[in-house]
Every structure is written in structure tokens, then in C-alpha cells.
Length: 313
Image (cartoon, rainbow, N blue to C red; front, side):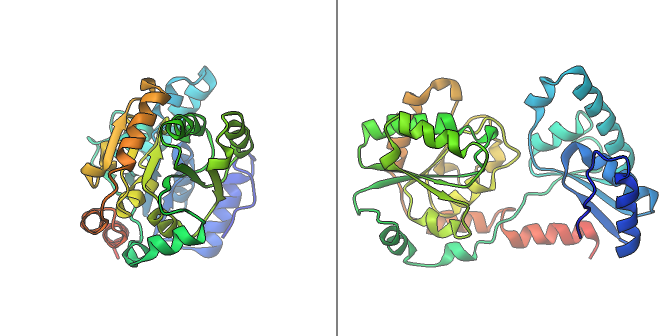
């Protein structure tokens, strides 16, 4: 059910209320639009929706601190609405919770981390690695490094390809696979051309078969500037991949600690490249890693149980 009226329009509130009346009554409204959730849940409260959930998926604290006075005023007002209208505060991670809800996060009884779960069934299929590598034309001795993410500022793709370029100089058999799409793709394609690694870089676009593509890889590179809690890193661990990630990513991401290696972005591309080549050479089996993810809160079955409890089903 889509609200076709822009949230910036003066008629947006009446349009949302109209939808809630038409298709309701609702037992719960679960809002995922970060700061704007407070306004959405205020509309839900005006129609007596009893369960009103605000859900934070990203750590925007750095951007919020750098905001101008108009943006800061908006954030102040938005947080006031969240505190007044939400019956539950959810977050994908502790950092995401603090970013949206501020100091009361973790103290207010409405606070709760609910890790987003992933479907692990595709990771259980055997013999996929050789099949996928053959389909993608990957030679037996080639080392494949992958990344999954929207091609936009937070994912830090420019630094990522600089790291890959340095790594290719150290290990000429290395190839980079980029899965995803976004506004930064054209710039990124120009970047790999200028670095001379276009022939070793494959843009796979948005894909529905990510678990199978991960099985073909030897390492996972994820130098994000900020995150809530990146599920792509959880998926990489489920696939048994050694992961090199930035140290600004929440430690809650480390479901299989022996697979996760962290570096500060300030260490520079060359240091990252050396670490990347080293961890890719240590790719092991998947079974124990998958079992760890299955026994964690990132198993979609556990996540589903958490939602059922929240919705009082």
C-alpha cells in the first residue's frame, strides 16, 4: 500500500491518516524511516494505533554532528516526536540505537536491539563454489575478493578500489567482484580505469543470488565510513569468508570472530592491501562458520521469533 504523496507536502498527514483508516484498523505500525519515524508514529497515535515502533538501521551520528543549525533543529524536533509517540524503540545495533534515540537509548525501557536475520538455507547447498567459479570464468588459481553494497558514500567504494589496486600489485592473480548498484557506479568505473585495474574488476550489479556468488570468493572487503549493522558482512561470514572491515563498524557484526579482521581507515590503502592478501590466502571451510551464524540472533528464525514477540502474536 503506497502513499503517493510526498512527505514534504502539507497534505501528507491527511494522506497517511486516510490510508490508515481505509486499510485499518491496525494493531501495529512499524516505521523504518529513521528520524522521520516520529512524525509517522504521531499520525498513527492520532488514530489510536496501540503499538508504534520506531526502528533504526543506521549509525548516522557523524553526519548528525556535522549538521547545520536548520538540520539540528529538525533532529531535535524529530527526537522529541520519537520520545513522545513511539511505544517501542528498536535498533539493528547499539550504535544505530544511540544515533537515532540519543542519550535515553539503553536506559529507557522501550529500547531493544533486534538484529535483522538472514535466510541461511542458500548457504547450506554443497558444491556451489566450483559451479559458480566455472560459470563466472574464474580460473582455479585466481583469488577473488568481493564486496556487496549500494554504491553510495557510506560504503567508501573509492577507497575500496584503491585497496584492491594495491592488492593486485602484490598479488596479480587477484580479482575484485563488486555486487550492487547506486549513484556512485559511473564514478567508480572511471576510478578502476584510472587505476589500471578495470580488467581485474567485475561489476555484477544488483543480484538475487548473493549467497552463491559469495561461495566463489576468497575474501570480503568492507571499508565503510559508517554503518548500522551490515548484513552483507554477516552473509560473508555465513559463507566462510575472511572479512577485512573498517574499525568503525559495530563489534556486534563479529559473529565468527576468527573471520573478522579490522583496520582503521587512516592506516591507508597499502596497509589494507597487505592485510587483504594475507587473509585471502587463509580461506578455510564453511561448516563451522555457518553453524555459528545459525546459532546467533542473525538466523532469520530467531529474528522472526523476536518480531512475533514484539507484535504480541
